[in-house]
Length: 351
Image 1: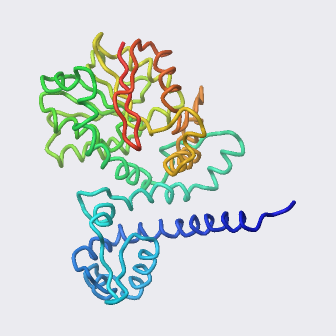
Image 2 (image 1 turned 135 degrees about the horizontal axis):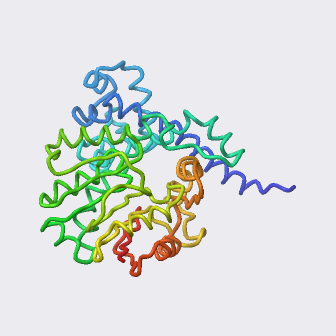
């Protein structure tokens, strides 16, 4: 074997970036949990002592943390003054309570790592590892990772892109949000369309408990409900809209779930399917977004899908063609891409 030194050095460069990213994840979670990004935002431009004082933590740790964050491009360092700050973009991603909550995304791989030995054994045996068995920070991280996208797009662009759905929701529609998790999407729909009745379903009881608390806190408990039920047998019929956000690909039997959804809709109902953005060919997805989704899919999505028959394991990069085929097999006669974002495919399926 002859090793090309230039190519090896290029590979090692990417390797160093990735190992550093692992520690960047730890630092981002520290910053999120201890309020360090928010503290910096309040007192910037600031040195480590000022950030530590604002956050109420030890200065020496903060000095090292700020250096790591600056090296990773998450905060900005001015060598002339020796002070740190956040650009508007850094603040929106990491510090603004109404921003993207970017650091929370790192909770997902960290939660997965806590069960890595069990996942390794599942991969070896071809078995599954269920969603509900993950550390609770997985559910927090997932909700905080996806919610900003829903806030930005669900009501402003995704619903308007569906045929006739916005008018129905304004007039008063019956809606099911299947695989709702902590209920972010459900509550957004309920707050935006007060005449409609929204029910969120999820098989994970702890998530439903959290969603119910969120509904009370938001003052929406009178027009939104949350129930423990799976996608294949959630109750009710005559729904004008059934939505599944970033969850169909995780299901052991996505075809069975889609068939059940088809059966619960009115004759003029709509299935809103939001899935991670993906091209139809592997080579279309060999990019940073594909890398993120394939990586998470290996240890989270495929792992859960293999917990029960038929263990379909669509994966988080199923792509529009495969999803459309599945929806047509489930009985939907009209399927189209309603819209998209860099992170989402938004499909409309109708009977």
